[in-house]
Image 1: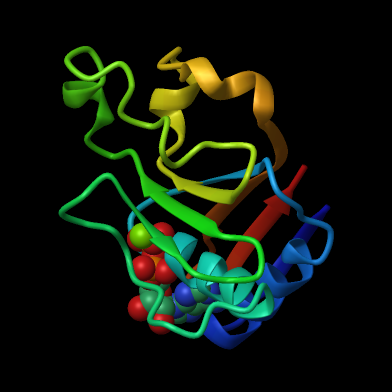
Image 2: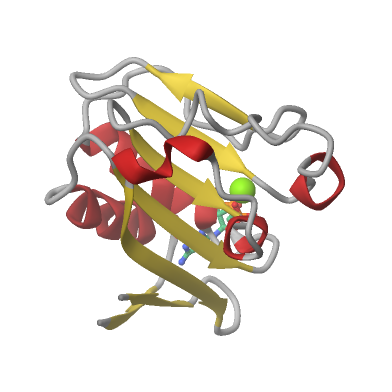
Amino acid sequence: MTERTSGPAETEALGARIALGLGAGDIVLVAGDLGAGKTTLIRGACRALGVTEPVTSPTFTIGQRYQAPTPISHLDLYRLGELGAEEPGLLDDYLTGGAIAFVEWPGALERGFTPPALEDVRVAARVELRHRGGDEREVTVT
Ligand code: ADP
Ligand code: MG
């Protein structure tokens, strides 16, 4: 599915729709350039899943967790290329069968930093956001 959004509220609403079908153990990979709206889309999804605390980019850590009926992990793997080799178990606390996980900059995951716990989890959706000028974004969900 590919859709256009014309502002952050529309991207949050799309995130909320993506969240509808998610359950524990589901991972959503969210790709796109800086400022494309990855965190914005994840914020909308998290709100729909019952997160009330602020949802912001985990810029200085690899991830954060939010309380919700099903706990949520929010990862940003921008730096994992450097960290992954040193810390093979780094993601185990985030990618677990008991949580729903959203992953910004998922490239490192696809490159093979596979956490041992991965049999409990599955990639439920892949989202890609693209700049289309101004506040326009193209969002593909597969
Ligand atoms: P990323 O996590 O991909 O770096 P963010 O979600 O943090 O991106 O930031 C996206 C920025 O772009 C925000 O400042 C947001 O207000 C702005 N923006 C403008 N139009 C849109 C849109 N259609 N969808 C999402 N964000 C948008
Ligand atoms: Mg972000």
